[in-house]
Image 1: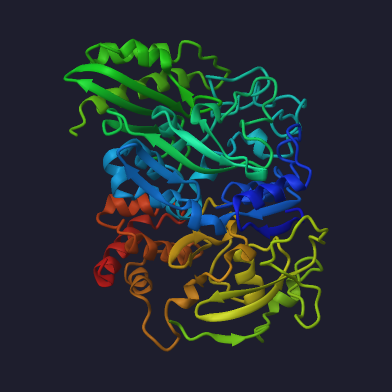
Image 2 (image 1 turned 60 degrees about the vertical axis):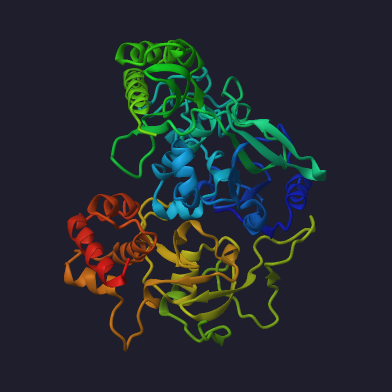
Length: 342
Length: 207
């Protein structure tokens, strides 16, 4: 691990000032930004040990938990502080009852120890598990080293994405919680330097790789996520997270689906579908959702919707199975959600 | 409240520390050293990132004042600077669970925790579960009774994690135990006996 300086933040504005004050700018190469926030540290320290991330300065925001560590549920929806630990939200009875897709997406992620450490804000910003990104002995990685190429395109790409990729990057977004937030139309609160707080749609947080896979989010330099809001809606209770992986527990998704349904008997009023494990960013399957509106939700309708969800999928040599697996995952998630007793 | 034994620069100097010490990671003498205070919210003042940071860790009911390279993980602080080698380094990347300790009663991975970020939170390691002259913790005894290990390398992490698993209320049945213990790998594959041990200890811990 390279040397860095360590400071504790006492307010988000001060924290942002510390980060920006070191000369971070929008064009800086991710992975070599001069400063990073430290919350749970479960991604950051891992990548610093691997020399993938080389911050010259860490600003520890863990001490702000008193201000950004709350969970609240009211008739407007669910509020989650960004410094809430994954395990706390996963075990929260109100979230389990009223927003099960959120609790499940967290419970099925990482391990119990990691969930006790990792924060919700950091979780949505976790970096890809692409081995060519994580292993610096591979020189070609446009995400780690812009312009260097992509070793995964013609490498071992069984884990890689089939949706939202570009010719410069096919890395998969690895998380689970983000898909639940995306399916439920969440927003996030962001604080920045000089008191520049703003609210943005969660759907606008992650940027598809395009020609700049090193730019992963729409956060500006110094901005820090302070919380999430999930609006109350008729479909939040009939929701679930289905995760398919190589082993039963403690593994990243090969394919996953966050689904939420508002049903009128057997007919779909509205469906919400977000996909994980198969896409470069948390992926909303809007065409599939629209195709289900007003339909009786049976296997044929679910299969047709799943096919639409993967209509634009592009496979490489080893990940073509994800198109079939992803569709089956969507079908099973939809049919399970339809039969939930709520 | 534990009664802290505040032994500054504790006279626990392991052989490992003498052998393993390097210029950048040495636990420096704390007299007149150039240690930075880790609590200061400094502005963008230039700092020497390689200067040791003065910190006090609360471990198993004792305070340990240390001057450490800021990069030192809690795991390395425990093993190489405090001399508590019960917590094990397996992968050093948060994938195996061998380094599991409790911070303020919650099971966490000490290899992905910076020592400086622990602050005044209480750290409990496998060494802190039972006094040398007292009976073993029920979970330790359960691992012995159920032969829940072979080589033993993962065992301290397994035991610390298992105590967390029971205290969190995630040990209601074998499936839950397997799921909530999945962050602790055992290459000897003693898993069935580990599950049995957790089940036994849960009954004794009143979990």
